[in-house]
Amino acid sequence: MMGSGLPVGYALLVVGPSGAGKTVLATQFLAEEVRIGEPGVIAAFEKSSNRLMGAQLSGLVDGGGGGVINTRTLDLSLDEILHTMIAMIVRMKAKRVVIDSLSGFEMALASMFRDDFREALYRMVATLTDMGVTVLMTAEIEDRYTELRFSSYGNSFLADAMLMQRYAELQAGCAA
Image (cartoon, rainbow, N blue to C red; front, side):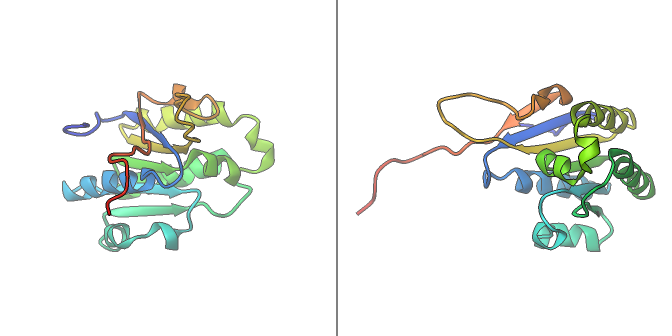
C-alpha cells in the first residue's frame, strides 16, 4: 500500500486498537531504513526497551543501525525529549524516527507540561520534519466497529497522512 515508502520529511500517524500491529509496522519501518544503509531512531514511551526489543529491533541496535531512546522515566519536559532525540538523530545521521506511542509520550511528560501537549507535539514534529527526518507516530484508539474515529486527542493535524489498522474477520464460522 505504501509502495516505495514515505517521502523525506513526512509525518505518518498510525492508529489502531491494542495488538493491531502498530509497533510491528514501526519496527519494519526502521528495519527498511537499515536495509538501505541508513540508521533510524525509536522513542519508546509505552513498552520497556526489553519488551520493545524483539529479535529484529535488537539486531538493528546491536549492529549500529538503530537507536532506542528509552523514555520510561517519568516527569520529563518535551524540550528534554526533543533535545535527546535530536542529539541521537545527528549523531547517528538518522533519517527516520518512530514515536511509539503518543499516549505513552503524554504520560511520560511531567504533569505541568501535559496541558500544552498538542501544541508542543506539533512543534516537535515540525522540528523533526524540517530536519528532513521522516516521522512515524503510533496512537492507540478504541475500535468500536460502528464509529470511524481516526485519532485520539484530535491529533490528526500532526500528520501528513494517517494509516488506520483494524481487526477484520476474514472467515466466519468454525471448521469442524
